[in-house]
Image (cartoon, rainbow, N blue to C red; front, side, top):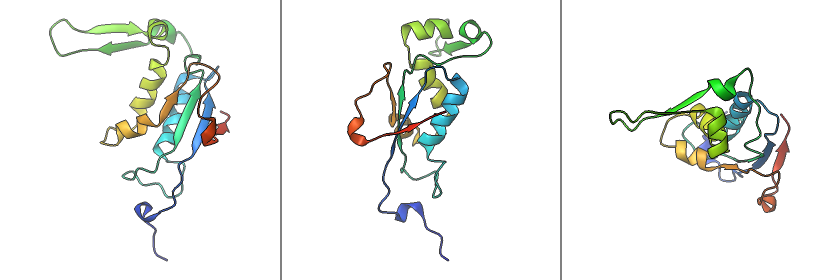
Length: 143
């Protein structure tokens, strides 16, 4: 039997998934979303083909953390100029940019290739419990 190359598949339909992040642990939620975005849950997975699905995350800022990560987890940015290191912890990041911590966690779990931005572009983060993608008939996933 001949092996099918995913590039030969003409009728690949992109699915839409909805995940509610309220009360979910940050790391476990991010790994599940990264798996869906990368298409690794499909039988005909290929790392070089853009056949990925869309993921809509509701209540993106209401995730849970374990231990004392609200104060201990530090995000660092540096522009490579002297003295430009900026540090912020998770609680202040959630106040300034509510969904940024989840987006960064998912981004760090995706491969750093040319397709990284395309994968991350299929992630839709909503801060409310509703979304505007009802026309795509998304499938709700319970974690």
